[in-house]
Length: 264
Image (cartoon, rainbow, N blue to C red; front, side, top):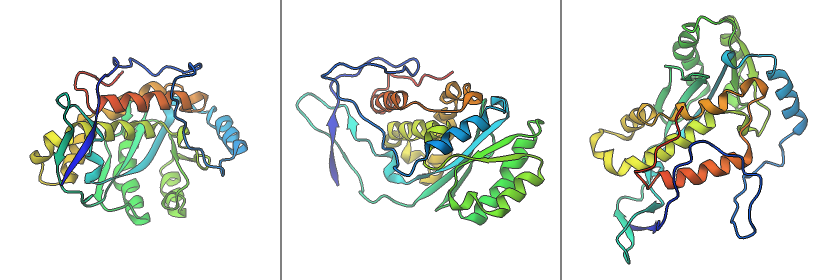
């Protein structure tokens, strides 16, 4: 199926780092994040106060992210003047794949799990025991603080038992607060890198899972979020203006091979 892509006529230079956007002119079009009405400021304040007792070096953030072959589709591309940018491809989204990753101040720990389908409670517990804890213990820092959101597979009693029996501390993010988890930035970068490269690299890999595994390392997605993570001890928070700015940069990055990610 041939599907037109939006033309991109001009691109601004790379953003060397995220810049706080305090003011905007009246003719600027400004996006806004969707914020759940169920978010509790009291719980967010309590979390921020609690997390300040720990050093940034002691924090480990983890989360899962979902992918499929449609993740690699571009919405923007270059084309000759007067012509649409088109690609012929199946519109089938293909199989669903998941990754489970853990991030420290130095980037991803060497334990990222990749699987077809979704992580069940059993899958997650196995990943904690077989992948995460060996990587955490290799850091030889005790205790580490392992921070998760409160989805069902993270809140099982078995999860508490596995982490605490290993001598580490578990903390949960306040509900509806992905902006408190810097690993979310890595997933944005990873998906942008995949959109930029899928069309050129897909025939190199036997399946989408192999491409996903390769992309995690090749994208350097975890390196970018280190900048944000350095402020972890003061309560990790991805400011709305910064996230909007970064998403706008990623839109350009997907289609312009002259742009580089602002790593380190």
